[in-house]
Image (cartoon, rainbow, N blue to C red; front, side, top):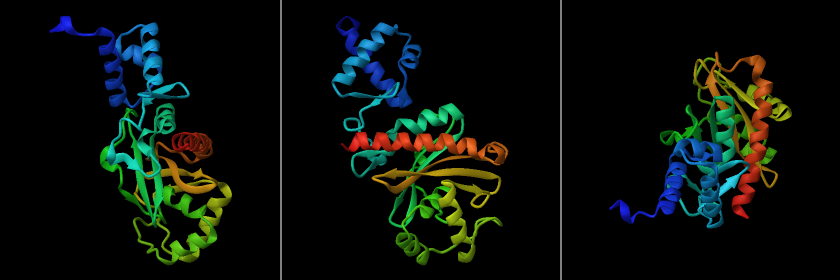
Length: 250
């Protein structure tokens, strides 16, 4: 019966349900979604944050991944890659599909894909693999490994051809990786999929490359003359991701 409802508790639960659905939202976005006034929403969020049900990064609120776990997204060191705020901010700001990939053994594993409307992960894509030698995610990580690790991976890597643009010659791939390391980013210009372009920069933890963040779109959407501008945004997001990870594991 409605007479037994505790309105304040109900509002708090509505906020938790909304964050579960939308992932990360600002105070203003929560106000608009729930048609609640600023004072009420602020007090609810303040209380939920104090109780550790909600965490705040910059101006975005999200569920505390230590309490609201999704084992499908779980990774070691208590990091849920799909819970990191920075990639969502980036995807919404630039309106471009954003990828997170990490290095596991000798493979690049996709840990988050954020597509339009840039609110939730594309769950079906999580834990899929992407080629080390042709994808921007793979190449930028490969390029920034230590010489010993890079050589060990190259020794055990088959250079499969995906398109006419794919690097299939070790003699060409190695100099290409040197260029990528020098410039700090990698581009997959139809090397993995025809008509698609991807730009990636490395993600670091304790000064070692552990993965990469990337923009992915059509060759019409990602123009060559805009690559450096996109790289700058990706580098900023990568640095924010590192800050978030350090916060989560300390």
